Length: 333
Ligand SMILES: NC(=O)c1ccc[n+]([C@@H]2O[C@H](COP(=O)([O-])OP(=O)(O)OC[C@H]3O[C@@H](n4cnc5c(N)ncnc54)[C@H](OP(=O)(O)O)[C@@H]3O)[C@@H](O)[C@H]2O)c1
Figure 1 (spheres, rainbow, N blue to C red):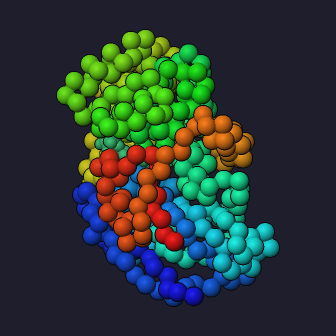
Figure 2 (cartoon, protein in one colour; figure 1 turned 180 degrees about the horizontal axis):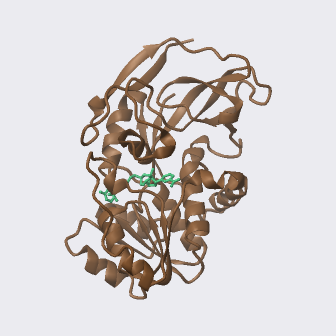
């Protein structure tokens, strides 16, 4: 067997993340112990939330730490196994991290349905697809006829949120930071409108894009976009707080926007944070519905591929400045 190529966190970022915060290491391929499985990584997802883990603002991720393999969800193949349910050759979803080989207990693994392209488990059928599904439908309570606004709309979670909202009969306005992305949202993915938050007249454009106000705001960004959304919310509107990507890549995040709690009170807005893990007992039901939409072509799973683990640090830095459309994955082998 070859070596295990690993990408380690060399130092924690003191301001913006740099690719030099990482280093490559080669080590021996680990062996699975009793009740363990050895997985060879095929691809890993590069996701914005892991930047919150490096910042120390994601409590579920624990304290940030240098000298360890960068965490991340991957898909791969079982190459050695001491667990009957995970036979050699099986395709699995696993917390592989940024490395070619990793050992896991069975409880950390999910089998990939052979009917699906494995990388769909890093997007629409993976954590980000489930986040979009539960955040929009359970937390946001989106329904037909609603106006749904979503930020980081061309990213992994966001492009799925907008499409699911369309499937459910909502009117969808996406917010993103690039006109070419906006064209993909309205041209390819069926969003009704997309607004660029980097434009000087963003607030006015958002107002014009939401003439009947906003019923559900799916917030991936926090910051100025959340501040603008608050003023567009309808009475009884819902804000699903999914993430704060505008405040991850810094050592000094800004405070929350104006309007809290005043606007929440006057407009009787439900603003609720959630973690996708809250819905773990319903993943199978959600995956069944998501895979039905993929099969019917109603849902497109956009991926944005980068080749080789050595490219992962730069791909992460680039994602944080908006370089991706859809789910960014690193193809490992
Ligand atoms: N609650 C949960 O359980 C859960 C689970 C998974 C993910 N999340 C959250 O979901 C959000 C999206 O994650 P993802 O993995 O799908 O990432 P992503 O949207 O694929 O990538 C991040 C995007 O954020 C945008 N962005 C970067 N800086 C920004 C800024 N200052 N203001 C506005 N937008 C900015 C960029 O797009 P532009 O070109 O548009 O700027 C970039 O493409 C994150 O906040 C993440 O923490 C939450």
